[in-house]
Length: 232
Image (tube, rainbow, N blue to C red):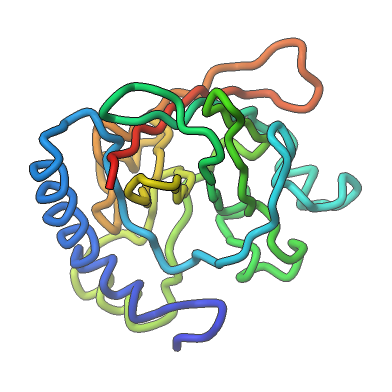
């Protein structure tokens, strides 16, 4: 079942909680070694990451679909301006030239490699922070979706009488020279599945609230979120 568009082995690991367990153990050990509890918590990578996403200027959009497409019409009500800073956990100072790698599913619950209606690398991008550690992007307020249910992972969920849904979330990998790379997700607090994630990845510190954005024809929602990285 695994292909270049789908990692069924990792999906099985996720729905059994193995990746989340490994993440939790590793995260606690690293934070204990650093002596800091202020770092942004990590979360699972998931099976839909793709390397080498396009480099996008700060403030740019990761929505590459044509505005005339049916997919874009469904996505338009969810357009969101997401911004914040990347900071040092130790000093609180901004980290310039950090890379914020982001990816998410579309409003139909599909990542671009699952969906022929989306252009290549849609809803994926890499942003470089400025001298003040700031990043900004246009993306989507995320949507809850079911993980692929037609393979071994789906059959395991059915045997366990469990649903396949993931809460609305956005994936991030944040890295900076001299700092430990952070793999994480942020979750829309208004999504009911945050209390019952099929892959056990939700952490309270990663719950976020999107606010309505006024006076901007490019985005209807906004979210400010800062990442805090530990030094190596």
